Image (cartoon, rainbow, N blue to C red):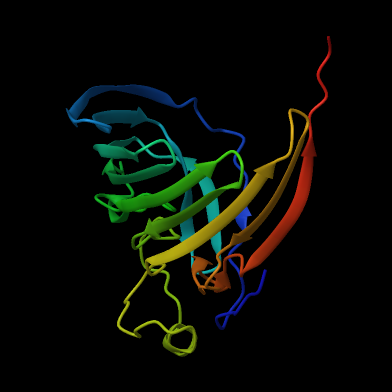
Length: 234
């Protein structure tokens, strides 16, 4: 993994032996429908209230500590659609809207209404797969991730020179900018026990950020090749 660093040191996170247990009260409601032949659609609504969740709370410019926050709420909707074309092709897509915020910050009023760390409000996936037992199984997928914050106050940022060097606009005031990464896998099954595969993760070598202070980028293009051997008893 490559890394580009901001000026200053990485903020250490102190432990806390006085943490209280977390509690979750929530629910979800979903529906599955088939609006057309070979098409399925699923929609799920969820709403979760967490009492005393543990967050990394900023103490000062250089230090954070694990602390209980009185209350957070995570609610949103997830949608998935699947379409089959004949026996060989399958197309699918999904989207999640995830509103995860601090709803009661107690005395630490600066946290009220802030988005939870490492939780993007918008995420999505798209996949196309082709399966032919005589040839191969080929799957192409894309993962779309929206703006994400890396700190409890939603203020940490990637420096403008680092953003522009990576091909992003320098207009992001804070947070980790959204990105899209693509993966490709190809496999062939020779018999009941032997399968060969090759894959490319982040096939277009997209530079995306996973952390601020220091600015850290995610996995670059990664290739993997191998075989799977399955042993079965009588």
